[in-house]
Length: 99
Image (cartoon, rainbow, N blue to C red; front, side, top):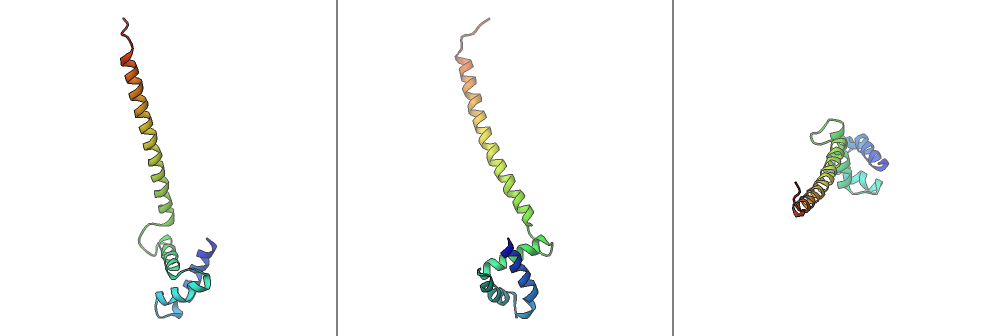
């Protein structure tokens, strides 16, 4: 996280020193020990988080992942309950009828 923050800060501070954003990414990334593409992704996400660019913020992405995980877990529980219900229904049908 610190590396990302540092990269975004350096990009913002020195962006004007270069002819294009791509040139800035290519010049700054080696100083951080990351790829220009990684730096670009970090900077674009920082802009989304700040409301300066369209798209999902980091918080929204995290919430979606959390909800997807919850849906997966609930589907598994639902399958288990369906199987248990079918098992007990079949067992009930096999019992002799009492008045």
